[in-house]
Amino acid sequence: MAANYTISRRAFLAGLAAGPLAAPRSVVIDTHMHVWTNETERFPFAHPFEANFKPPHVAGTVEMFVEEMDRHAIDHAVLVQVIYYGWDNRYVAHCLKRQPQRFRGHGLIDPTDPEVASKLEYWMREHGLSGMRFSPIYYAGRDEWLTSKPHRRLWKKAEALRAIFNFFIAANQLAKLEKMLADYPAVNVVIDHLARVDLTSSDPAGEVAQLTRLARYPNVWVKVSELSILSPSKKYPYADTFPSLRRVYDAFGPDRLLWGTGFPGATRTQAGRPSLEHELTLIRREIPFFSPQEREKVMGQNAARLWRFAP
Image (cartoon, rainbow, N blue to C red; front, side, top):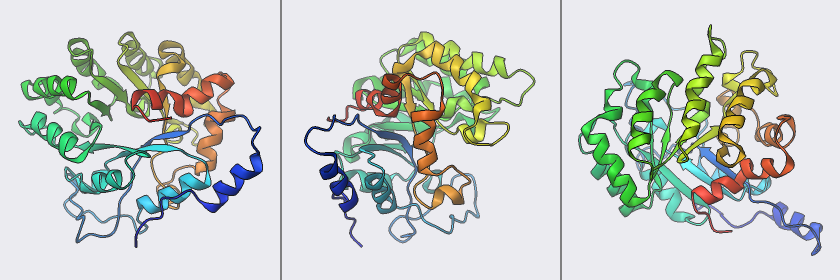
């Protein structure tokens, strides 16, 4: 069934109700959204780490997400290739081509592939992706590719293409990434999910310090996301993460923090994630040290600048 990407009736009526004198609403951008479909003949799953992978019973389609975006007045989103498809980024590319103004796309490349630089160029030039996501967190003890010669070629290519990199990376791996940040300052890098700092460890402050060290590099951004996973208590609004988040905020400032959620619609519950209502309220009301202007930056203004979304 073809997707209806026009504005929803509810959003349209809400705009009318606001009236011509209503103050303009600040842009809202979800910078971390995984989507997938059960059209497996067209888009087969190819999980790189699970030979017997079975997808979730509810598909997180882009159609589901667009309906949710319209219902909650989310203007844009960054679609991040879900691991279910492995290195085959065609579904993200398919979604992006249908709505290039509303979405940006990030794919996955096998980080151990010696041709990783040419793969980046292919997906960006031929399919319009904005960059790639790399996940050293899945390669604990074998993440030497982070600073390898093929990855140095990759970062040089990224400079030429103005690519943006996402890193799903553990705090104890950030020192390796820092070597590349120092050598390739023109490449914008987004650290996903606060580097999954372990707030239950014997030294949570040390974990956070490994992340805040990267604030010295102006090309590094951080996603304020997955607080529900980082929280030791797992209780909304995850206030036990706020002291560590405050340290990240103090280091990076409000201009390099980004909001993202992860899964669309009913799949949020399926994945044990907060509802979109809670995700929105978390930034807009619950985190105590963001000013009203800073909330708007985190919710979308920063992302609009980084991914060059049109106003």
